[in-house]
Length: 438
Image (cartoon, rainbow, N blue to C red; front, side, top):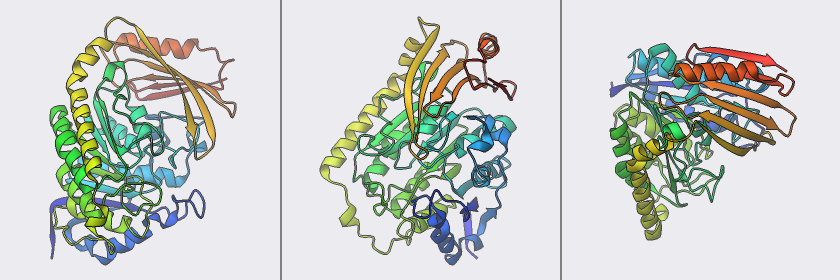
């Protein structure tokens, strides 16, 4: 019997009863062909490849990450709880050392869901990776985590959740935001004042192929990970860089994804996007699973795979080399930038508009951060939407100092309930979540 070199877990949750619509790319069939391919190739018969059934994420798991408006069960279905629970299951199995690595093959996806949730954006309602990570932090006390997002779309939701967290390194490789949703993820987006440099964006030009992705991995991602020294590496494994994906413009292939997985050595992979249901997902996911298990993936080939047809141009190669130089220069300057950002001001503010394309909601936010030299800083978010909701959300971070805890409680207690529909306090120091209704 074939035996895996690395004990590898997998959770399957195709969510057969959930879809945005019958013809939407995010629909039931997305994982049907992958499931068939995994069964037909006999991957679950390999000794050391273990299938687990997903846990159900709880409302408390969501409250550790999000401010849901008006409440959690208004923005999720049971499928979202199982998808997030599937990621959590894989995380638990890794932390308990029942497996060395794990792949959550689940949907719906989550990496466009930000800290505040008024509805769905980019097909995402809640951030399944962040829900898993924050559960693992609470249950197992892990601290430094690196997330490497290889979805074709910038992982703007994950970036938003960890924007002020110096203990979470977020690296996103994606198609340049000038050419694809959500239109963000540029190299100058590096994180908030207390975590400057911990967000690393690597925007790639359309038609980037295997050569470009692996160059970025070897020259930028792996050296940055080596510097950061995370306790856990999570891969947000979007498969929509594939050359057959109908909603993107890249030229990656199943062999490339598998090789990237082999070199990255993530502890946990969580499925994100990927909408070439027949032509890509079955091959990419099988390749990733074999790579995680330390097995030969050289025979994994798409039926129409012709490397010459998807080879990137010389101009694309030159552009990628310039991007990598910028990224590495930014990473080296990060400590100096953080030092400057932490001096001379008590509070930092930013205002922005966020569009929920899936649910057609426009949100306006004003964010205030206490720029703290002793912790990542307490955060308040004044958020209103064109649907009429107005909330104040206060986040006390995991390792908050006493001054930031006191400031957060003061913001929450003193907020005028007549101005807001809801006032939230997310106290990560005490794993407590309070709500006042206006």
